[in-house]
Length: 156
Image (cartoon, rainbow, N blue to C red; front, side, top):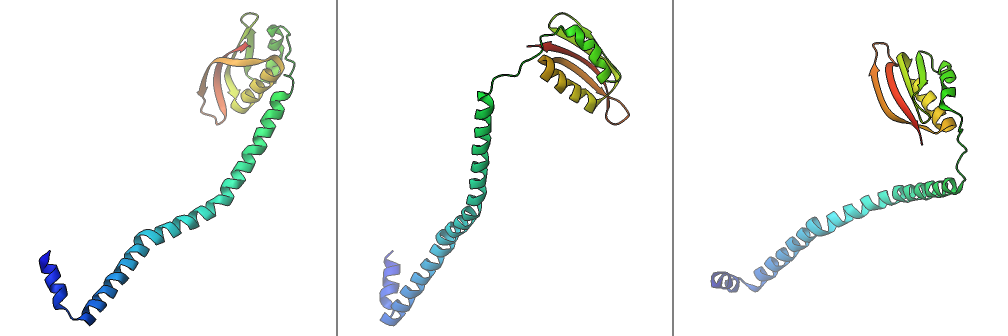
């Protein structure tokens, strides 16, 4: 340490001022490069993200209002008709047969059923009879959009 002090004292006053100015300039460059510049980049990035985040919050608020409105609505009336009546609705699902297992469950089987038609039929039976899928086994067939289906639907 004393070697540094001796080297400093051996310099002329002008050299010491120049070295001090260089040290100050180097410190300012390091401070700018490692502190100010990253903070400025982060500020710019955040300034770009804020409008997107505000739009996202506004969307979530609108969706929350829609959910609250839907939750406040009375539940839709679900048909309490016997599930055996669904056997006739199988005609709406070509290639499938519907059989009532008991008063709460039905079995849907089809060797070659359109997948989209099956999904539409399931949505309709959920809305009209309150049925949900209890178990399902679907296998894709070589023809696109066609499946082999075995489902059990239950009420409740």
